[in-house]
Length: 616
Image (cartoon, rainbow, N blue to C red; front, side, top):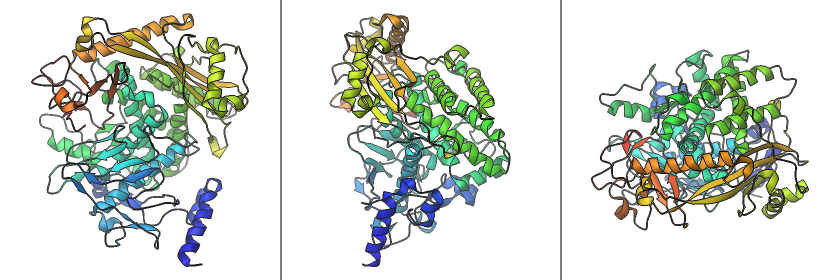
């Protein structure tokens, strides 16, 4: 057997059993690829501190690696829409078992100017984030994409512009370059930006109905998960934790590279800003900052989802600070223990969240419930952690004491179903839901969709395996007419109130968690359902009147004109659905003068600094 075939055979055998191997064993036996390099943060941070510059990434070998890079879940297609050029891909060298440049160059710091290095950088960061979410400390299951197919496309040099975004329609993460055209800066080299957009894609995969703009908080939750992903991914890196340890000396309330999002991009915008306060504080530029004191009371009507999201991001950063204070020992080790716990505490509750119209209070309840279930009763920190979880969410104004601890449980089952029948298929789960509509507050006259069904394999403290969860998500729709003048050009359209729930069961069929969004037809929670309907009607009307809504048609250019509002009204399904693209940046909307806004206002709104163009 040739050396190459023997190496492939060994790699395949290790790949088959990788889930049973400890981290050190994986490293010792070479399950990770050699020479996969990327920026820990971005070139701006690398110039500030060499230790947080270009370092190796741990990416597992898998069968079918190909040029691009391409693997089972990702494919780099480096097409520049502005120039029409397709950049040659990084090549998979089967003999060396590594990705190389056009002339066989090792894509390390010496060759970081090559576009093929950019391609590998983006691919490695996205794959590492997917690994984090799929790992047992987080969701403990394979994560689907929110698009058709199982490969997400990465476009490292999509064109010139100050942006990067996840686009469900093109099934892609698109990264732009900006600044001086002769010497541009690249969003595909910013770890925070790449992770942020990957967070959008992952959330769209596990909760696709959050893509609909049912409320500002729902859109803000998308931004929160994206920024949280960047925070956690940065903390997981040993090199960066060392840098932050030196920066803060254990006090995470000090400015640092982890709490700051997209330093190079923030420095660029700060340099451009005229008559605006600099965002370079303590020598660190930033686009947004997790280390903030924003409360829900600070959020005004009309504020962007990005600004609103910072309330919840700040709350989770407060949680990190409190966790870190509870550990003793060297600063870097304390930060790792705190990081490991925060990944569990912040990401595992996503499976408890409702399938539609999520609000910050829903996530707070999910986090509190997850902690209550899985923090050991004899834990010395249980009482202290429960206390500051409660205080953090209350102080931020995210929820009140009663709602935080209000863990709803369904009524008594009318018809018992075996857990294996429920978890075996979506049809089996539907039979269970249909037979127990009364207990779950589901109207008999509504058709019901099982939107997702999966089992988890998660770890708790000290790597202890948690009880396997069966997560069942279901959705139904209540249609209503936009029958008032305040809906402007949308008057007469049929819209939808999304309703449904997430039911989490253990392996014996016991209910662990239930979060639901009621409609207006069941008497058990008709008041709450009617309140949701009224809020949605106001939400649609307000955005139409503010000129933030445009119609989607066969030709968006003809309908929307030269500027595209951030909210798109889609009627292709027969009912009106509002969508918002989860871009990285706040963006101003050009209104009036041939604008797309249905209300046709003539000023810029308060959604941020950039105009939304048709390219978005």
